[in-house]
Amino acid sequence: MVALQTTADDVENNENLPGMICTPGEKSSTNVIHSDRTDTIVPAQLTLMEQNALLQTVKQSGRLKAVLKGKKPPKITRVITYATSDDITNADCSARDDNCSVPEDLNGDLLLKLIRNGPKQFTFKFEEIREILLQGARVFLEEPTLIEVPLPCVVYGDIHGQYSDLHRWFNLNGWPSQVRSLFLGDFVDRGSHGIEVVALLTALKVRFPKNIFLCRGNHEEESLNRAYSFYEEVCARFSGNFEGKDGRALYPYFRSLFSNLPLAALIGGRILGMHGGISPRLTSLQAIREIRRPLEEFEVGSLECDLVWSDPDTSPDRTGFRSNFEREPLYGIGQLFASDTVQNLCKKLGIDMLIRGHQAPLHGYALFSNGCMLTLFSAPGYKGSSNSDINMGASLEISTSMNISIKQIQVTEKFRQKRITETEQRKTKTNVNKELPQSSVKSNELQSTASLFR
Image (cartoon, rainbow, N blue to C red; front, side):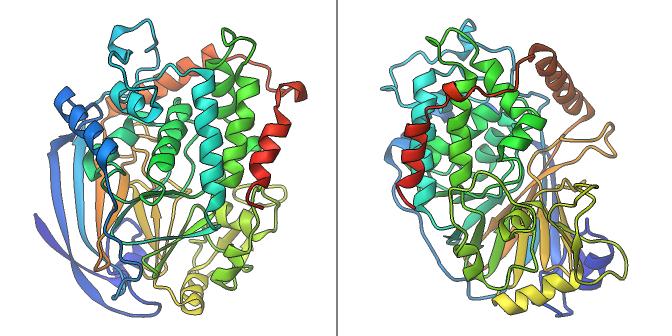
């Protein structure tokens, strides 16, 4: 364990260094404790005894301690690095595999069945996943577009269908039955098990609506689901053998849920979280609150589009905002925002810090704008080809005193290669028509869900 002295200037010059989270313009330094716990393996799979204990907390959990407003500015105090096994979600696991069955009677409770099944592919019944998506869509639409998340809490960035890693994080930090959790979007696409990720998070939200919070990412939209992999995943997994109900009939329920997700979170009254970034249209917190949902598509040039698509502008000597042609070279989508815009916005909104996802830093997190913004990515082994460039995943644990502990999960080349192999296997198995027949959409049911809380 080493105490590392770092200054705000260090953070500006090297975004992978942790440092002081300052109020805008403040020059200060602090000790950040780095703990190497790579001799500790974070498991994806719990033992049977641990599973039984977790199931009891899910059945009996009460309210969590809640502090609505932090008294001090946030600061990073600790960075802890863990290792994990090379196990990933078993893509070939099915109802034919006894290891994946749910033997005891769990009263048809999907959440309990998912927990008992563990970090493996789950064999869903069409009606049970349709029902949890409908319930989740209602719960999310009851929330404001800008949700307020009390302290303490754990914050996660992109998951991208890496279901076994979602289990790892919960096993490391605590499940939402006992630990308040916030996710900043991009639950699906690229990884092979977006269905399980969405189903588990939604089931947890329905059971513990005040313990777990989800913000929408740019990948929670139909156009990207079709361009990448989630639409194909749904169609391939629910093809035939469902009494005429297939993935094309199920996908609209995912789309409806995505359309209802909040777009930003105010953490402890002092930190603003979103998936992408900021916007010249973000003139107040009220501007976010006034965004109306359901919102099926992001209109380029709108505040909601900027919140999920924007990126920090790391070009030297840049100031202000400019269109993000790095994401969409022809027309641009979202904003590229320079360091000065972050500090100006923090002052205008009366906050201390921004947390966002949307990019995959090597160490799972990166700092920007004198430490006033942190990028967070929670899908380890998402990119890279060797131990020197395979990304870690990271999460943030924020205490009631606004101290931030960063937890990293480090993976191996073998882990990364298994992820690549799994993705390639999914691609070869998936060959579906991406056109969605209108007749397969239960429009009346979906529209009535959307209109409940207009």
